[in-house]
Image (tube, rainbow, N blue to C red):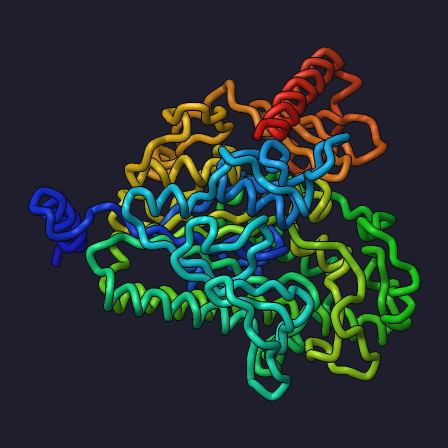
Length: 530
């Protein structure tokens, strides 16, 4: 049997649906967002973690190697759902402007994607983390389960359903956040199938995994209890070796910054975690056997969290298949920032005798494992070096003529998602709306279909978070950590950011830092508009 024919007939059926009017031919849209997941944490990006469902999407869709976020949770969500840089919509700090940052309220022109999709006939569903201003149903979702307690995976105290507060989860309830988020997403799809089959849907599934605290189901942890005994140095090298075999496109592994610790220092909390915790990515061989055992157990929990997330994604995909909607559903998977080097204790505290991954523990990944999870890139969440801002991105859409199994090495940014989905939904582009500021994003549809198409030479990408700043123009990037001078890198040959060219090319450095400042002033100006 010719394998092309079934897909041809499905596409013909979608076309016939369009001309006869008995069904909406526009694709269903699904965004699945991980939280603090490392760039190399999926099997299809070089990991040893078991992620068969996402690996299947990658094998039959398109993977991006140079897709960017904003380096932090809430700015990435603002950019993802508005199509603008977070500073422009007041959702990251604008220097000298009160009312911006994590508590910032978006200007009236900065509507969220679900509101724009509702206006053109989509049903819209949210499950998981919110971390935006306002409430989900106030901002365009028909239904929502919002998990607002980010410190407890087993019994959260703050969560809502359709913007109504739910009671705190009892410790005996058998609740686990990743499962609950998927349960709600599936319930929304099941109701959609019964009540709204003629309408396309948009599902935003925002997992909290694998954000700290490291808490996972015991059966998931057990699968990885012996996986990480060799330590972060050896396993990082193994991940990089796999990346080179799968067409990843990065020539060198960044040097481990042994003296670089978490972005925020909490020495008293570190002491609370006990003598086996370390806050530097030291040589694994320098750790005591007890420390090695402790650290390997932490990473096993992180892996279990990613594994469980993939399993729950599989359940969501199965529901879409059961609805006979898979062929014309676009699924996008990405992460809100790189793996985190943060180390702290919140929630119900950390009990020294508690098993790693249990509800009574509050462990964090730390810079040793975060360095491995971001292989082969440099630094971590909150920094705007590549390790903090690069995310895996997988796009899967059987009816969309995507080039199956292809790598797209063109740089793109999370602000591109809104223009892309508006185009596919046949909604008005932001550029066509009166009194709507120009968006820095652009549609990715053509790149998904032809991943090797040329990069637009005039495209730039801009970053600012907590004083960390960067600008990419073509293959060149200027970047600095707060308080440091600018550095210049040529990413085509040095994605690992190891060879600073600022002394060799001062004119380019000056031109690019001036462009960073020009764009900064434009986004700060937008933040002042009502």
